[in-house]
Amino acid sequence: MEHTVSYLVLIPLLPLLGALLMGLMYLVSCKGKAFPEKIYGIIACIGPALTFILALKVYFGLKGLPEDSRYLVQDVFTWIKVGDLDISMGFFADPLSSLMLLFVTLIGTLIHVYSVGYMAKDENFGKFFAYLNLFLGSMLILVLGSSPVVMFVGWEGVGLCSYLLISYYSTETNNVIAGNKAFIVNRIGDLGFVLGMSLLFWAIGSGGFDYMSLRANAEQIGPGVGLAICLLLFVGATGKSAQIPLYVWLPDAMAGPTPVSALIHAATMVTAGVYMVARFSFIYAEVPAAGTVVAWIGILTALLAAIFGCFQRDIKKILAYSTVSQLGYMFAGVGVAAYSAGIFHVFTHAFFKALLFLGAGSVIYALHHEQDIWRMGGLKNKMPITYWTMLIGCLALAGCPPFSGFFSKDEILFMALASGHGGVWLVGVLVAAMTAFYTFRMFFVVFHGKPRDEHAYEHAHESPKVMTVPLIVLAVGACFAGYLNIPSIFGGHLGVSHWLAPSLTEHHPHVSVWLEVLAVATSIAAFGCGIFFAWKKFYVATAEEPFYTGLANFAYNKFMVDELYHYLLVVPYKLLGTAISKSIEPFVTDGPVKVVVWLYGALANAFKVVQVGYVRVYAIYMVIGLSVLSIFISRSLNL
Image 1 (tube, rainbow, N blue to C red):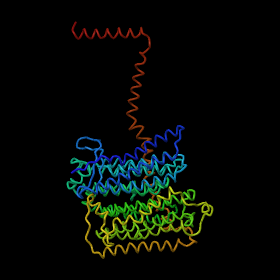
Image 2 (spheres, rainbow, N blue to C red; image 1 turned 135 degrees about the horizontal axis):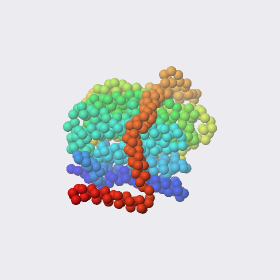
Image 3 (cartoon, rainbow, N blue to C red; image 1 turned 90 degrees about the horizontal axis):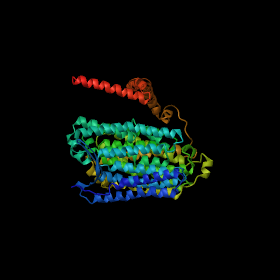
């Protein structure tokens, strides 16, 4: 039975209307009639807040339905109808999308509220919030789209908004370059998504191209075609969710304002790839080879990003690499077919990563936009709310029990071990120790020890309530979100996993409880080792910036991956483009057009000699023409 509702379209529509209204207001203000920041702030926050209320309505609406038919649909209009391709602009809510809706709208709302304080007195205040609302609306289209094509609309929307927001401070060349880099790298991934979507339609699309029809017909896909579809879709995910080899755009995305970093890294764009793989779990679950590729790419990305995070000095880049690393965990989860564990880590990560980015923003705000951790120190007493909330966020990120990150990360590692992916589990444990190390390296250097910049320290102060209240709310989530999916070993019932079960195709292996105890104990030991080494080296008041040499310096420079890409890909591409523009375009592409233009010109020059502009001459031409015509007709009629 189809459960049709009429309010799903309002969820993305509200922030999109807010973006449109604020965009028009900003254009009017550019003409001389400025609007107060307060008006922009109210409009910006109303849409996200209402979407959260509607997300709660979706959740409770689904909860009231039988477990085997928990879905809501709304077809707004027929969008594309060509042959077998029949696409409705429709929206679809099930347990998976409802969970995504809840944290995307809640955290999106908190980030909007925080931004009102953080972006105060910015000359483009209205434009910023128009972009931010557009970003949230695009993400909600991605989550609620009833088919891969509608999802792709939101997919491209968040890509566009990332470009607009990363390069928001467009007077700085590096910011514009960072925005371009994000846009271009994502286009590479998007090509894989489009090819995978096209192959999927070719394979089973004639039976309907919405998710429900695709899932019902998935058994028709052969193993070879299924593998190709999964890998092509995953190429799209590596772009959007910053996995090897397309992760390089995400650290540079720190060029945007800090609330943008929180929105991109915590609740929206970068989680899209994980959500997409989970949404297509009915295909990935039938192609274990594709899942293995996803898991290994994910865990190796986690390892690489953790190595880089251990050596960064920019507080936002440390958190950026931690995001790349945590995304690797999520892909490891969905790769070993533990889709609910991967999505649960998306859920918990949204709280503690948004908290950490906004906390970092609070520090940057207090220190007049200083981002180098080695110019900070001793801020614990100056910023108590930021200190305690960031401590909670760091404990959650590092996987300390009983904070949220522990439960979600441990579930992924346990499922990797239980499903026979011992190598993935072992690398994951190593990354867990490194995560604790670089997280508390940052925390100790920023908040403990002696101030390294006395002038900045003297002027540091706690952020206003409009910024600290969202921190407190997110800290509560970072503390307790993990309790929604407590495993049986701790007396729980995996509530989130059971909620997601109707949307996902996964099988939980039956293993010994001692194996789970081993996995938990190893995770806790990894956390303990990481935080111990960070405390030993960086907690002391005399901690100074280390001087890197050899391999450490190589890691500090991020293994020169960006430079390698530049010389292996960008430079040859530019040379090829230059060669094409100077040789092929003028002679091959433009040559025939130029010849046609020349011929028309030559013909025009030949005929213009008879166009003298005198009526008597034209009369003579008419007489001559009529004479010739008369002779022709008379001969034709044999007269």
